[in-house]
Image (cartoon, rainbow, N blue to C red; front, top):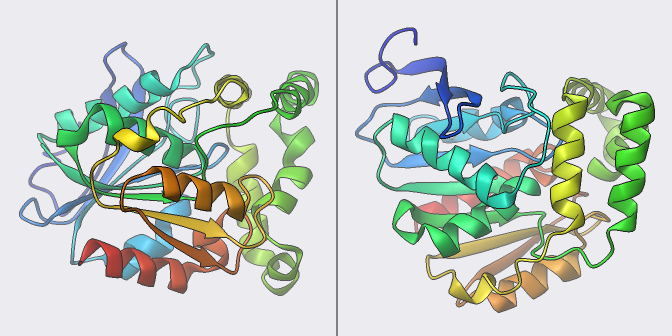
Length: 271
């Protein structure tokens, strides 16, 4: 590990999870600041939070990591589970000797956050669940995506995924950002992507939602087809006293509406 991540202003390093998986981690900010941990969407990596890190820099100790099978973390094949992915995040916090952190997760990162909020409540201060759900009733679309990736790799589904991630209006207006998102997606290992699709194909955390007691904000995208606005609202109603807000975005709302997303995040975390 280059340097001491607890002392350096900015550190990039790898840690080992409980089962030995190497996880890429970036930490920015002084240890005296409140800890804020970001968790990426399936098919993304920690760079998806670049704008939020820029916007919130100086107010938090910001921790980002690539989920297993994504980015610079080990491209381990499955099977995965939500508990496994959540314990990876706890391993990151443990390695930094952080007892409690704010959590901001989008899509898969929000699903992981729900598990943590219910099963590791002492580790989570405030919880932001963006463009996510607690239940997918139909496994068939996930199986179709698994089959496509097994046959042609992540690049075979890239155009369809990006069309769901970002609205057509945004992609037309900001083709550079759309191209960056596509490059991030196709950089995901086939093994990691398939394993996460398998996790989502059997997702049902509806029993966990009422157990989340920490202050929670659910963010939905008005044009999100992957985790529709109604699913986000239903999730917020199951979590005691959760807030709910809607952004004019598709599935990756923090990229499509970066300033508005950061404003919502800053306001909630400073309440």
